[in-house]
Length: 245
Image: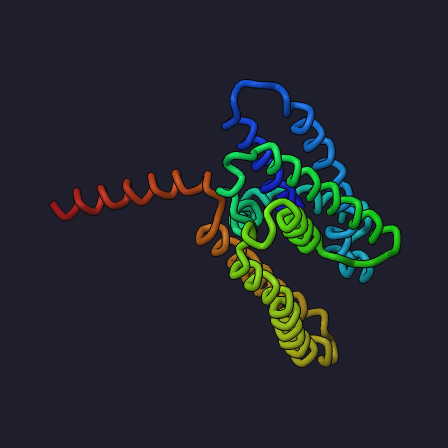
């Protein structure tokens, strides 16, 4: 959720910081933050509901527990793992260099993209349609760039990769889900007493989930984690040098 909002708000803040000390566009910055809150509300109403729908529907967690878990882990996940996605949406889709002389246009386009994404997600939630917040902001960003700069302002190679991922991700998710359900059904559900086997399998599932998350954080984590990692690496290297000498 926050990773969807971060690239747009960071673009607005960066444009404002690099602009001359004038306050002509302050209203646009304030409006952008207001729309960002509306967009966050719409993402929570649809995108987050998609994530926790199966858990709530199966009775694993209640709706209140799902809201609490979503508030915590959606924020932590976006802070630890959302940097790459945010960078792609902020600079990977459109050529921001073409807006150096027209920063006001980039700000207006970013605000328009957030507004369009928020409106569509609210409409989709009202119509009970499960959609993706990332798809919305990608389409909105491409739309304003086409109007502002035409086809020259879009990085088509990056867009093709993103569109391909929209088809590959459900396919891989379906394959992994099918394999996991086959193993659970074969070794747990079809046993005479599945409870003991299920309890013994829980630590394995927890370890795999935590291991994948930790690997993702360490491999492609947030930029603010790189400085501590570099410090630890340098400290370890100096210790090795001292022990060898």
